[in-house]
Length: 306
Image (cartoon, rainbow, N blue to C red; front, side):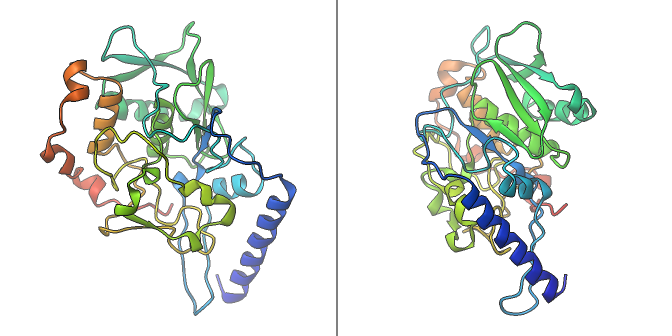
């Protein structure tokens, strides 16, 4: 994209950003209500190509573009109307016996063609934790996978039919990410101790998406910060200029959507009391485990630009 096209693109983005902000009434975050966590940019393809000082181009994922400008899904990423007091939410799913949880689900007809990807996401979680999934029968509470313009999920068990939105460009790893939200897990970069591990560059964030980068007073479950978490933002999520919005202080790649990290697995095991419930939730985490790197496929993965 040449300089002139970059200028046109920037003007176009600015126009619609202003239009969007003026067309909607900005309401304060309600810290006591239920939330919808929209994660369309989990498959963000943002990249930057500098052609000289002040000139840049940004490839924005179509799902993110639709949600930022048209607000297609009820709440865009960062419009968090929730109680900001946890990483692992109290509204966890329950099982018939402690340490074994099976979450009912249904796949909408409009998403039948993505069943294979959804099953693969289930497998990633069930093979590593005590949480499994079964087809909905008569349960009052269940997950409904339905087609959306982006990837989006409510946070924790909300009761009744609980939608998870899956867009065309949401890959298996993105679906895992959304299911993790539904199981009760927030974004890793919103932990209260995140400043020790990453730097948030506020000047590069789309102004009305700054709230996406707020810190929460969450329960970290006594586990270390995890830049390799499947719940961590990527480097350029919600960038206004194509530059990094989050920079890892240890130079590790962030924002992988390949598989659960070692610490992701531990978080699920702790919250859902996998195994011996009394020992699992109180036993100190083994230092070797918490510092273990994920296998080469994950540790070498950088955010895909699909």
